[in-house]
Length: 325
Image 1 (cartoon, one colour):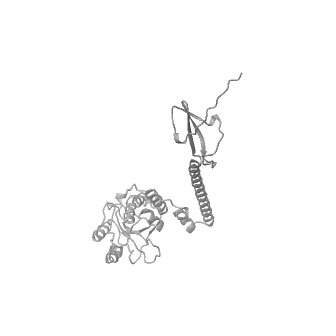
Image 2: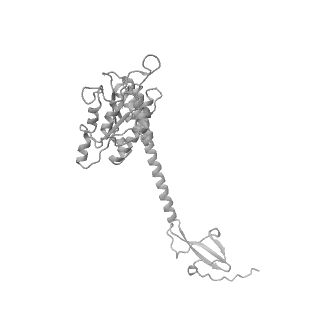
Image 3: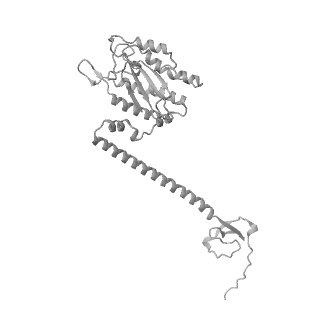
């Protein structure tokens, strides 16, 4: 997730006057999409969709009480998920756009408000957002991102809110509160992962990217070691899972094989009031049903008054026993 605050300039991001130029820029993609017969997203805020640009301009430009002519009247923020993150929030552009608006409303703006340390909530922030789907300088397949215009003043037009201040949670002096951008980036990332059940790799976390860009050599080496250990541990877990799956599959196959190979054909022998069930044929030992097999008494099952497969019952001749004198 990449989040940045566009620096004020004399062009599109000139924020000392009207937001009209920025609002016009935020609509530049719509005509191209409509000409191709593709739907376009309108402006949105915390509670509404498809808001007219004229309302956006009027609302932001009129919320400037007690601001000097050269003061910033609004701020431009870009929220840009990676391709992997976009695939995690939806399959189509429309699904991704709806998920992105939900994320802005439920995660980003609440974290933005909380980060001023002035007991603000999302409803205190005056903002308008616009979803873009393309980037002219990108070769990525998916490029959806969100542009935000955020008023310098709160909804009540009383408190000044600057996300570009260098003050962080100050309690004394003229400026109280402040803004911690690093904390915002971290909390917005955690909120995204929680909302969409996203399994973030260490190498794509804000902490890793920030350390590799701005950290000392020692911190960079430590991050690389953590990444190595993380990937190694993940590879071991995957290997263990593969072995467990293979073992489970082998056990299932063995059970299935044993059921087939251990199936015995029993021949019932009726004699007087009992039926003797003899394991006369065993597929596992490749014994023919016509073979003469000696068997012990323990291999005979007695079933009283029952007849099983009479057509296979062999006939036994009665032996005359002479009484021994």
